[in-house]
Length: 97
Image (cartoon, rainbow, N blue to C red; front, side, top):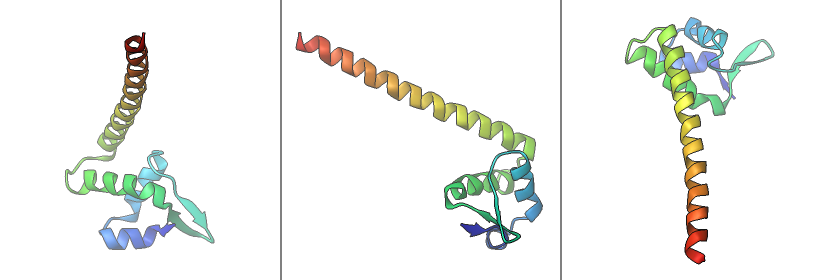
């Protein structure tokens, strides 16, 4: 777990941006003893979203759209991989006959 305040200081990001991402459901933040933390599992996602805002000057609505599309692409890639595996299985079965 990484304190959100340290992440913001290290990356020079406003805390309000992190709140916006949390309120949009793009990242999960855990509160422990009144301090906010981001899990290490969420860190890559948070850094990606931060770069979209800082380096590409994309607003929150654009970030939400991009995140949704990237998620859909990942899901489709998983389906394609499963279908390719099934196809390989059936093609290799045919060759054995």
